[in-house]
Length: 417
Ligand code: ADP
Ligand code: ASP
Ligand code: MG
Image (cartoon, rainbow, N blue to C red; front, side, top):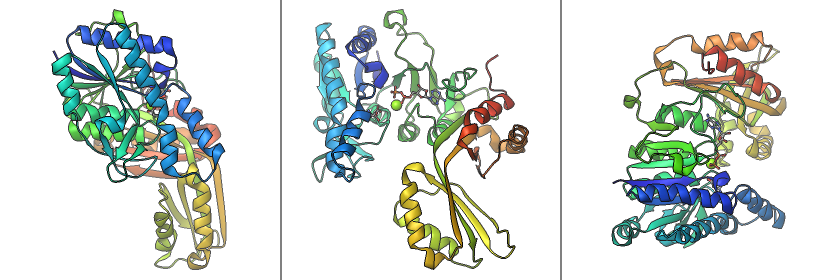
């Protein structure tokens, strides 16, 4: 007998029929004798609709009220799943974030989980064999007593945090794909499912655009050494042996992975914007004058490239910010123009970042160089590059994203054969 967290994403609970299907997955594990806590997302598309309603009501809405609105999607699915489970003769109770309580910071819309009290849920496993059905994505700030949400995709983080709090043996993330692939299988049909992936590699994949798991959930898995298993909710529940190994991807520590590849996977993100400042005077303090105000405005700068301007005397500086912060970043820079001193600001929002990830890169030279050659042979222009120990990223025109991802996927031998 073990203790499991089972998380189901939006497409898995998109309607009552799918919720019934989820309930059958839960029943299988309960029948196998496991203690089960389920974490659910809102029905597919619901959170987008709620976000849109807030924007419609007022573009400058209060973040606390935004959270009150967008947290409601998960409230509905947790109640519905508890009703369906009860109808199948399984003891089940729904829990909202504040009822547990899942205590978070007060950073509304992107709150961080601080503490979860798992006592009551654990007690109910023992006393009544009760399944806990927990609304993902939401928590409560203990100081203000207000509902918070964890950022888009946050139910993954709820699930891993709850798994740690109730000392679960494993956290199963059920979704609309049967595991983590070498790249998004919807973009590259030749992508290959990974049996295992190290937390470090998964962290990079998720931060660089693979939305199969929220970044913070991978961080928590790593910190608590909680095995996270990504699998499909569309497999027929009764066909799965609860004691066997179903198709899926285990995210685990590096030591548990035997076979090693130089490149693990490729991620991409179209959520990028590029700003280039032309002919900046080359003197100390300029970088601080540019990036200081951006940091004060809470804008994350990612890639930075500096080179000599056309005139040979001044410098050009290019950097990227998330597309959603683009307007604010532009305004912040233009209002500091006097201090920075540049001749022209150029920008582009139709850019994307393609990243190659693999902890094997630590011990291999020339991995990135191969990519630059392959991309140039396809006439794909690289606007900026960043590298770190286990990944490198290139910024390219958005129109070439799929071509670049497919080219690199083949180049590094990741294609399914
Ligand atoms: P859920 O609603 O279950 O949380 P998401 O839509 O958030 O599901 O995440 C699953 C999606 O992530 C898949 O449908 C897939 O298109 C996308 N995805 C992106 N990169 C990858 C990858 N490397 N492996 C698997 N899925 C990926
Ligand atoms: N429903 C939330 C979202 O769409 C949280 C989640 O699904 O993980 O972002
Ligand atoms: Mg998700």
